[in-house]
Image (cartoon, rainbow, N blue to C red; front, side):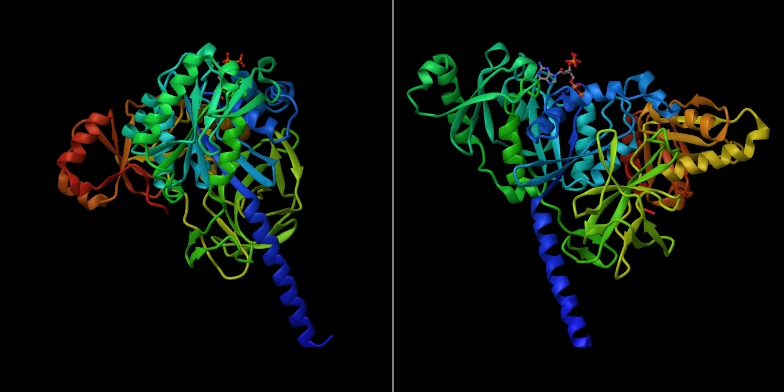
Length: 546
Ligand code: G4P
């Protein structure tokens, strides 16, 4: 074969890869749900899977979770607590789209993983309980989405129960989060009289019938706003109320501006009830049309387009011992460009080494399945031989590194003590490995005499996980001594700025694992006071990326 025909072969291959990438990217939508516990995340997830045909009867995910045998200690801990510590990626197809739902740990005891997962998401769905409105965990997660300017889609849930007025809920989102709202659908009635939604995209009324506990898709009757059948189908009072509401939102509300949605400045809002399935399908349809497809990612060589033919991605989460049969670790990689293929050998940017990516997995709920290929927007689970750390880039072709994942401000602090000096080595090895894996942040007192590491976490569960794993994997029993602080700020002005300021009251200075100064405060108020009095300290809630 002549050199010319080789080159021709190559260019045909390049073209077909290009077409394949463009087609797959066009079909992909990736999102994470942000919510406060109990808002209905598990229920909505199930219903999305139901509409996606990934399950045939709602309740399956929960049931499967209950059936799962807890053969490992790690799983046992999940089981005892009845919560899901591991977060997984759910993939399902709907219409022509390939959807990746990045599941964030859904319990009150959430951890930094919840934040990190948002680094791999292209869109967020903010789930709000109609009776409660915005709640603390949702606000925190919203702040992380805002940092990344993620498009946010709001689903206001539990309309089948008495809740707050829809307009009042929109107002709360606008005032408190500074997000413009655009109601894509509007509820008809509420509580026992919740009948359906008006879809402003199609200008049609969707009236639902309840299925038994919402275990199957809702039966829908669709009519135009002016259709005379409406009189038989809907109580007059609800019909007039709807017309009145529509006049208000159409009169005062802004137009839907997708560019603003994609910049994270405007949120399309949907009303519904995940439990009864009302409004889930219109939401899914609109979401697929409006959501951001996988886009470019910022790197050391500039913006990397997803269609860039060389494979690249970054690790956003490490998970230990998910599968009781293998005491292994999984590194979750968000694919950013090119096509991932099984058994590929890639470059690991931080170490400069090459790594063969064997046994790649996609995850459905707790089950694993091997994959052959993945595209931008997908998440793959790689058995991690210990080489990967959070934020690492893997790539082919020209060397590049994606921006790392920052440390988020912890809110709980405790000294971790090793009462048994003979276990000194294991203790330090364990603490340092758990830190590298991102299970917890480790800080140290600025006072050299105090040597015990300080665990710094965003959720109580992280302490328990660290203690449990030190005992089980490193054979070290530890003690925890809680510290009375709840707010942390990195001093980006550095040690010099701190020294100039002199003694600060009601705070303590610690250093993070990179020796950078961090101030711990008892409460927000103390923090604001110091921030106001000493702007030169340049306090930050997020650590600079290392
Ligand atoms: P989470 O993952 O966000 O924590 O919430 P989850 O889906 O577990 O829902 C929390 C509770 O709210 C559940 O009730 C669930 O059935 C209920 N729920 C979710 N969506 C709706 C809705 O649209 N309408 C109403 N009325 N309730 C809803 P539970 O009693 O705690 O559990 P279960 O016995 O129903 O499983």
